[in-house]
Length: 429
Image 1 (cartoon, rainbow, N blue to C red):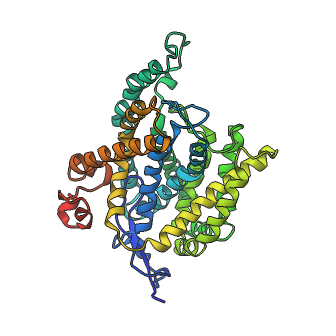
Image 2 (cartoon, one colour):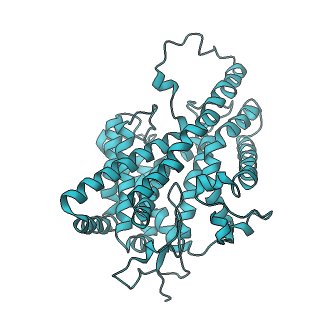
Image 3 (cartoon, rainbow, N blue to C red):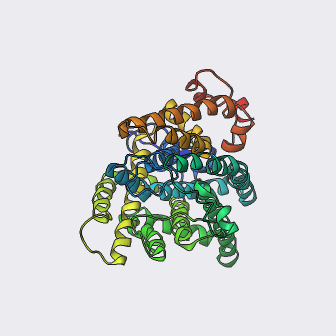
């Protein structure tokens, strides 16, 4: 069997960038005295795919919400289906947990390579600043234009006519950009905690403790250990134990901060253990089967009474089983660069930041139509993705926006897939 080493290159604002050489069964680098993952030589394509996939799944999630049977979405279609409920439930179990794990994994990488100040500065520029820049377009614009159109279409009363005084915190809700704020909170907490621990125990002792924690998290017991903060968050949440609720204001909420900080720390510790991805790759099938079984057991519609702590534990275990399964699957099999996947991974951050007005406009257009749900869904996704990809290619990838959001500016090429292979110095200016 061909031996293989994992290395990493660069980073993205949301934590990606690394890949392995080709080969079916990776092993960690033989030189124990030097961690070549920090050398910047290669990318890990599987984690690129996961990061991009987690963001693009968010667009699919928001498209499906229009057909949810209990409403609760900004645009309510006249048709709904339990299939949409199931898809939303499954995606919601793991998507942001996976995303935060990847952010923690690459956060540790970037901090080791660049130092604490550079890491924090980079996250302020690429994570915190987009909240302020994109919030008016992505949050306010849909609320003042598209949502009123849907209210008028359904002949609903104007909510502002009978609304009581609304808290300023609710008016300034981060909406679907909440994850950037939570991620920034995780960065601040980890950097501060790390500084304190280094001062108290020393850097070497902290590194040894991190490697030990990483070994436990990559062990067969890792899912159960990682799921504990997720379960605590659900118990604090207290109701609707089928998944974690996002925070509704800019203030930290323990029910979401604890589980997502936990996921960030898990990723941070997995990076500290050099063989973590190899071990998870070897157990991807076990984790995948476990994820399916636990997802069924945790389903909120099962006609079985479960104590609150049992329901919370099942949901948390299901979410983390999916996370570990996908992490292992992608790092084991996505070992070569695939231009289409690489391009989508690069585009995914921009696409997620601006997708909401476009998606909601499409949902408003088809909401009252008698067309089958699958046709409406395909129309919404096709139009949304087409606009997002075209705008990324011509407005972002080769401009200062690409440098700001993704850390590099690619040379412009008409063929989008050809441009993924470029690694010339000009592409990094």
